[in-house]
Length: 296
Image (cartoon, rainbow, N blue to C red; front, side):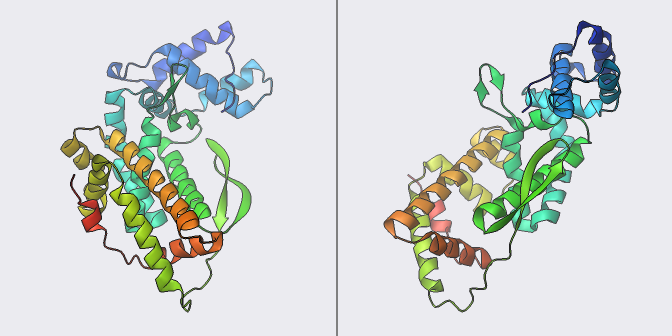
């Protein structure tokens, strides 16, 4: 993230005016100082090391979607009222966009996995880390969210398939490059397909069985019982963003363990490991209900 510009004292009245225009409700607890910092981050992203004149900064700040920036700033700070407002406004839109990008089943997971990054729970040097820090108000918040979903989807395809790199960016508010997937090889005639799937099922079942019971329970609620994050949160006594974060962590841990087991224990090459995943994606052949439902 670019180092924020530091507005000169002459911008104090401009910041106050924009803060009032943003009209953040009092229960979001968004201070003028926090909003000023968000404006400074936005200006730093726009001008990127240049030394713009005051009139250029003023013109840029006046073009921002101030209410959306205020909401993202309050959500990023962890305010529960702001987060409730965000969920109310954007939950349905997020799911619709994710389904359009990734399909019904994968779209739901794509949208849900984004919540943890948006909510942000880690803190470094006293500062909460959240994906909202990358929203600078140049676009509408809904537009930015759809761009982030598309980027996450393409990045996941890149991680699991062979890819070609593109230099294009997805959004003015998140200028990091993305990649475009290359079509996977046709493997329908591979005589080893059954063996690869059996190996993948074995190591996946072992990794699932080794999870903490609460992690297995969340995965079971999500994948077997098809519950929403909010429904799981009510059952386990957690905020839905916490559920999303822990599900995401469990998925990453599972992938690392499965990947390592296929390479080390089963002695598969990189290409063979990728074939295991590709065959499973084409038609998921495993029933993991018993493993996920295991009680301890």
